[in-house]
Length: 103
Image (cartoon, rainbow, N blue to C red; front, side, top):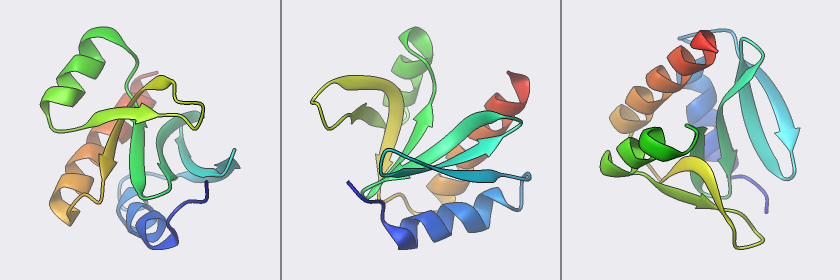
């Protein structure tokens, strides 16, 4: 599945104000790497965040995200947002960049 270029541009514009981010294409998705770690990715019309499993994922789901479902149908330990507004996107990206710097 290809990624939504307009959504990728929105992520790119916000994340670049927070940190240097390297872009990598991975399996049809676009990942933004911060401090050598994936902070956020875009696939299709979704923005996804590697939050890990367990409590961190549960908290992300409580904040309005859903689990990213891989093409194989398997749920991945990534929180995902579909078509987030600009404020929501900026909040999630700030958390993602901070998480990438802590690793």
